[in-house]
Length: 237
Ligand SMILES: [Zn+2]
Image 1: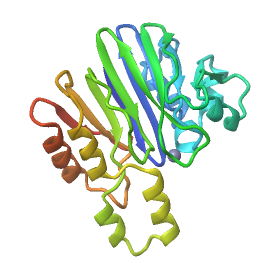
Image 2: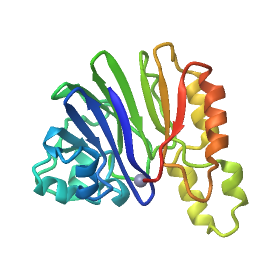
Image 3: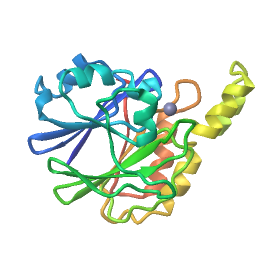
Image 4: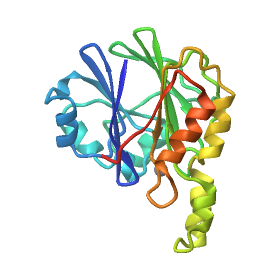
């Protein structure tokens, strides 16, 4: 399984997961043209698109995807908020933290709840070809451990020290970031508690323009996961 970021920022998010001839698109925050480019103009290889939540930088181009025949999946709350009849909601029962597994081509997908200021935000556990990918962005934290993970792709949005020094940001905005996005030290704490014996790569996603430091984030994450795991930051695209 190969994880490839197409774009990762508050201007637009999209990621490709490839297994053999099949692909899955994660998020629809960039134009269909860019998705075509990323799939070598073979968008028919897409088994579907999974959306984490309704914010425009993750879902702004859903309509175009649907018009081009791509099946789009989201939580019932996200689907309702996006008001696109054709979005396929997967079952995520009230009071349950995870959906039952569902199959998209060679991929087995489980959605899990995340913590963000959206209707019903989720992350995804995606399994294929003996590998397991965790995809989680726009979440204050993560409540699950995911044993056996081989690829981690997780938000590393801001450093609280840099954020609190930023005098140009209104207090309400700072508060919103703290209540809806992943802080680098919180991410590292979570990483330190994981069994990473099968993990080979960690992608840091959705780094904030104003409140992050890419090389320092990579250093901190490398220290948290230990040797043998490639740590990279996804580009803005
Ligand atoms: Zn968001």
